[in-house]
Length: 80
Image 1: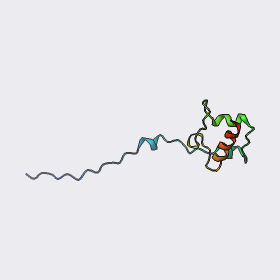
Image 2: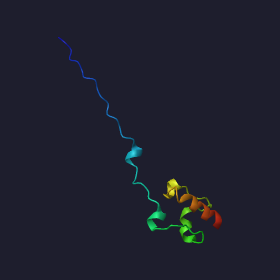
Image 3: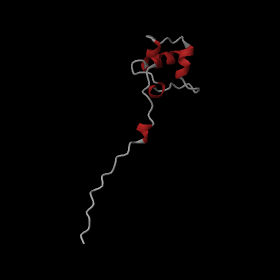
Image 4: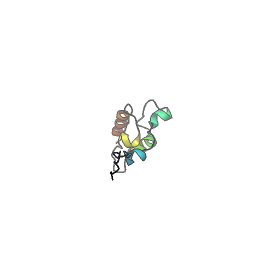
């Protein structure tokens, strides 16, 4: 009796969990609010971008775009 040949098994590629858990892309809060220039005197606005220890929150976490991040850092540095 002849043995039945098996077809080669194709493995299904798994989708990494990091892709599945990824949320929507962050948008720049300054562009959303229509702020053209970040003012160093606006303390309430800048409080959200500084930790309790006084460190500036990075743009990948805060969602600030690359064009506004240097202005954000400069205005925080002036204030502190």
